[in-house]
Image (cartoon, rainbow, N blue to C red; front, side):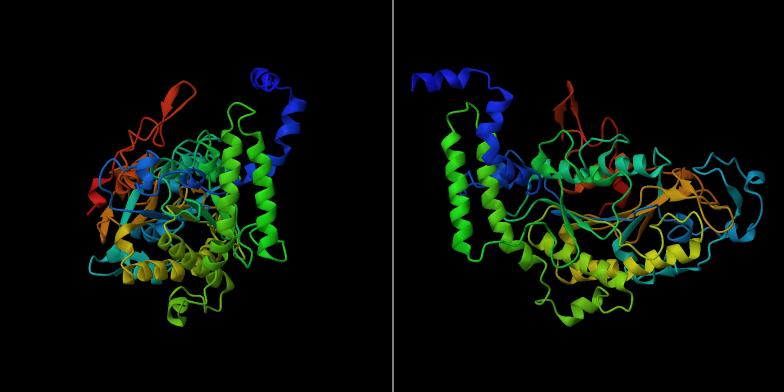
Length: 481
């Protein structure tokens, strides 16, 4: 026994560390998948879960959950939610004679390009929406539209990092990770931050969804479309008792090390995550099984559409509703892989934007209407946006280049004043001229609706307290109810 105590305080060699920890490495991989639940199994269930974890809202929240509809590539604001009649009047003219043209991503500045789609006013609020989104247009009285968004970056990768993490550099925590760090999850069997992979990984890759310097348990779990949404979710054993025996044996091995290595947090976390993984083997298949959903509900989401991409995105939107019903805190949807590029139409604008819009329009409207009919919209915040906008002049003949100086974003649901239009761009939709709104402002508003003061949500890293909004961010009060 004396020798054992001596070994506890002797630094371990790399060979010794690998020898004693090899049985736990497989389980440690689960830590990146399963949210904050590793701590939940070891706390007193008689108290509030979030209180015990130190994760409580700063004030009474309006929203419990967030569904983030990410429009990868940058939707053209002048072709969707920000009509500009002047583009039609000056179509084909030289933009350099009308306004100062900024450097563009590809430097191929063409003529002023009118929108190929007509706009109509919808709802009691009379909000103009283009022909691209006839289904979303039917929901405008529940939507607060922000026409004055700006980004700090004109290139996809850095703009994506900025949109998702509040920083244009790689390695910072995603907004979903920050929200779970601040509030935790409401479900003991599912992760708190889920990304539904529609088929396209955005520029910047999965670093858009990682936890950065926050603990790895806060990063996203990525669920793919199809019958197997998560790797290794189906047991390989022929009978449940065989899996139980394996887990019990691994737990015994790990337990035998506790007390002999000094700090054993990693081993204890591995044991807890085995338990959560076991629970997910039953919860995930049930979650992704839609047999209990009515035919009318599936039709609402467009799951009977002739377009396979509409059906695919419709199933993702329905899955998002089922996730927030089960207490998942933050759900992000990425775009489907249509037979064109993402919303990044540097040429062939009409075909590319129409394909992308047809895939997402009906499912998103179905999501809003379904949540509303179930009483869930009043506690769920929906956010729709891309990483930047597009130019009012052509790239070449029939495309649009990147434009970080103006784009549109909308929110709906918990705490949002529906039928509201906030901010304004110039007559060309090129630059913001009223109520400039930043990505930091969007993040601050999201956190506010979740009951979090964005200035108080901090994590000590690199010698200073860091937050999602850095040293910026103002709540967009005019869009709040």
